[in-house]
Amino acid sequence: MQVLVIDAQGGGIGREVISALKEKRRDLHIIAVGTNSNATSAMLKAGADEGATGENPVRVCAAKADVIICPIGLVIADSMLGEVTEVMALSIARSNAKKVLIPSKGCNNYVAGGRRATLKEIIEDVIEYTFS
Image (tube, rainbow, N blue to C red; front, side, top):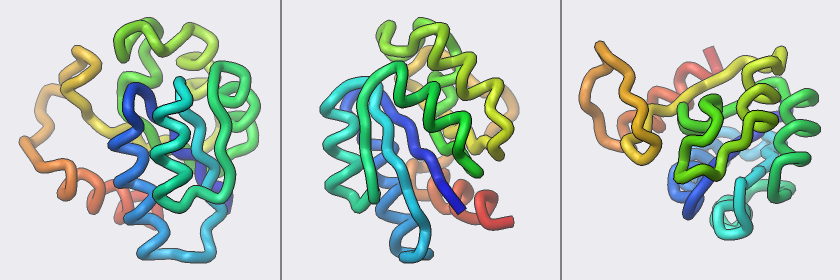
């Protein structure tokens, strides 16, 4: 299974997701793609097997992934302080991969009906859903 974790800004959500995934399943092949080099670096330090930065890696890797895990803002063009391009958002949305979207306050998008949870609780839910 090829898991693609995409993050923006400082890569903190991606870092936490990758650490939790590797703790649960060391055999996973995890590719980290950041919208910027700081995000990519944080995810590589967390244990991602490969990493790349920018729009084209999002496009290429989303097309090949079995699972994509990212903050919800990554499927909304111009979110994350403008880091998310239309190409990035469409590449993720159009991918045949199973998508696990993480709610995030940092992207000005709110998921109504979602319960308030800590990042740790959200990541536990991500892990559970990813392997269901």
